[in-house]
Length: 536
Image (cartoon, rainbow, N blue to C red; front, side, top):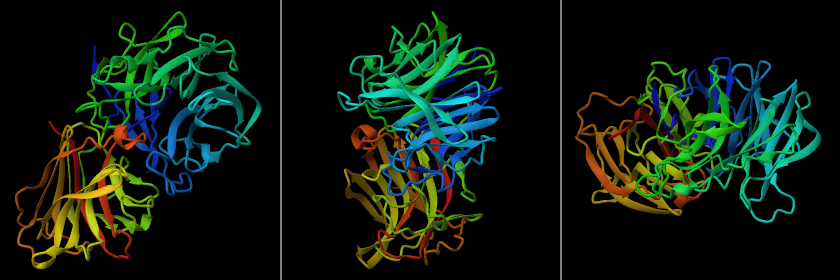
């Protein structure tokens, strides 16, 4: 018997969807306003996942102009039929429901096919006898309240990429006055069609319910045991919250499992990590699915699928990256200006973009997901700010209204005139506040952010005896003398960096940032030795 640890994808990996092709499993998750969109993972055991690419890698596939961070891509579904992979999703701020196809899940994927008349969000596909059926969620006509949605189904002609035939309303929800029935997926087993959905909203009251029918178009009857999975009755002190948005898959050994989203609050009911991907076993009784039989909950440790073998669980991300090439797991905020980024053997050069991290434009921000409650992250920065508008450094980002900046900039307020300074800036509810500032005099500087739960520390070290700042277009001396670590700010509070406070649906990201804050600039910053790791 082998034990695995949940979540199987820690950090901001929400709305998981999974499919199996032979002995291989493939999984996708939402990315909202980050680019590239929809990471795709491969596994042979449902526990150890390796990212093999991203589905939406071209601006022509994913338009994110002026998108708030919780807009963009909602709830992708991955399915496979007759040699072709399908990923269907919603770009809520850029065209609605669409799908792309590929014969190799690692890509490349096709240009998007937007589906005319496909209302609402959270689309999924079901294939049977050479036909394809679209199902999604939309507002009910004459709905009684906000979030009064329904699940509908209609055939999708893959040749014309159009919905055809009659539209069927197949289910509303399991519970009276439930909000946001969404995330529908259809499966067929033992002569029954099963419809799995979530309801109650994607926050604390999230829940998974199921209905079934002898015919694809209904009538669907709800399970008398609904909801078949929820944690909303466990209170705010339970370590796993807001479980929902599940997708079922059968293993080659005949076991059934569900991938789903949930969050791990810490330091109180604060969900900085966002919604993560968990795995839970499913059995069948009386021709209904039972989630984690005898337990009925998602646990942090679980007995693994029979196919796991002797392997240990992998670390999801590499600890350190020298940024000589673009890492698959890292993301930009919205569509990047490609000319602003240059990956070279000497590191990543980022041209200062006029957009600030507080703007809705194509900000120069390249990031990873926060995956742990306590972590260390650092980067070596070589940068010569020309004026007070220019800055570069690290940002711990929830959204443009709630984040922390740790940046090198220029200040004219020093005792001897203008000087380079390191600043820690808190943005809370759109208001910027300089929490700490210290002058620096180095060829290059190593910036570090440490988190111990909800407490943050900002520190730096650098090369001593600076005479001239090394321009970002040159190579800084890596073997110059190093100063010891100096703390700029300790005991900063990270509790503002969660969706309960900041709104929206995303988890935190941590990344490299450069901006001229509205001014024209040809300056650039060089980033090397980017590091992220869990800390005790």
